[in-house]
Amino acid sequence: MKDIQNIEDIKIFVNAFYGKIREDKLLAPIFASRIESEQWPQHLNKMYRFWDSVLFFQKTYKGNPFARHIGLPVETAHFQQWVNLFTQTIDEHFAGEKAEDAKRRSRNMANMFSAKIHHLSNNPNFKPIV
Image 1: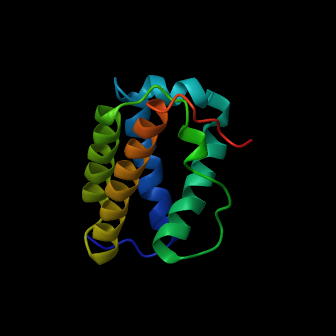
Image 2: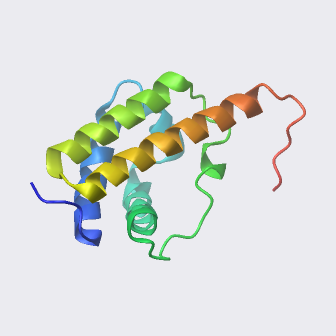
Image 3: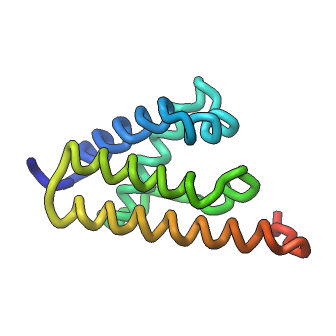
């Protein structure tokens, strides 16, 4: 298997990964609550740009990924499943340094998002800046 080398490779794993997400018992309802069927192409395009920025330092993604997750009814198990599906998808399609970097970064993001969401849900004085 080859390593992740470019945006075309990112499209392969993003499409496969979100295909798994949309079928997953635990995660599908969470995503469906925020992304309607007709919005999936836009979401996938945003994720291509996100991972292109993360893995290849391209400045194609604009946004605040954490802000979109505030208020979701998610727990540690959701993030663990997200990482499991992400890792499985990468391993099915790619091998190499960049593939390992993608898996490491996904774990780090999931841990950070989980910790922040847990903190915010236990802080009744938190008011997001709009």
